[in-house]
Image (cartoon, rainbow, N blue to C red):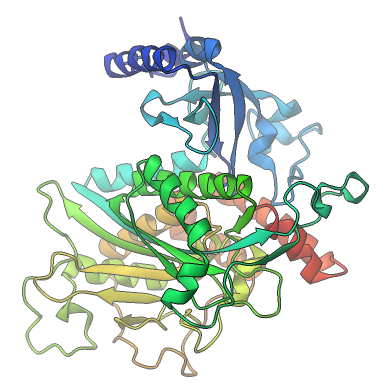
Length: 492
């Protein structure tokens, strides 16, 4: 029996996909195949095979060391896998044992920035054929299944802000100097691609066109639903906007986009970073705005209200959202402190929550208000009616970001939570504020009984341990700015 059969992956559809893929690889002259898996931090890990090994990998997978699931953001293992008791805490991880990465033949991509190289997305499986329960993609798959059982599907559109810099010395930069090697190593030396502080100006786009063309061509070659590339306010800051897809596909696209963008730009002498706040004085924070809606099995928008609720005003949620949409919104508000740990997942991201910066500071919603945490877009009768969550940072793990929305929103629907009136002044004093540090957000997650049950207490404990390790290292750092430079700028 192949390992694919043991995992329940040997369906006629997958077998047909495997046959087609093997024929395609042979005909195209592909030489190398990267097997990629998204870790807890949204970073793609994996192994590279020669093409002749693809058939074996599709049938039996490829081994990976289990500690890849246990790394903090510096790549240190946050659990003691060689000491007694680890099997009780994390079954299957004792002794840094092996898991098996199983490729999805339907995820095949030919990488446009390198020669004769293909890419397949994978998920990790235990020896008994079960998906590793702590895998972040599996977490979203379970959340999506909760929606499917109700006849609903989540649809997501992505607005991703990030920074692109020109490398001063792509071949011999000091981050490549062996005498400077460290753990984590030094960040690259860079210069700007545009000077910033001139939002959406065409002149700055023209100056940044070369790297943005690389982003455009790479995304489109990978089949990503790119809509636009834009100049953001900060120096060297840009934004990519993607069309709506189902939640799992949108999360897969985000993983692929970040990974591909960084690699394609690096080969051309540029450095892209999806950290929220690059380690320079004059910067603007980057956010990841997640547009979300639901459709039922007929394709009808679940959040759309046919007509405003009688007597409602512009500050009433039921003037624009259906009853289910209104309760979903209330669920996101109620669980916002805990959601923050999954939506803003690095210590670096918490400097973004400042007043009057078109970033949220408090747990509020508004009608087309970019200062509120949740921005409701649309009107009664508008099929594009949706909720934009502005809480996330671009470094967040996409699977956990989206899964957290589903669990919080469903709790709002199930318990018929009620949203307060919309804010018109999102930075006024008095509202409950968003957690101000990763440690505070993780504590809020640990105290949120609904999310702990939905995600599973073992996952919350695991996630909290890794994120607490990250926060503790920052607290102990002699130079916080250098910590951010090494921990995030060169790595995410």
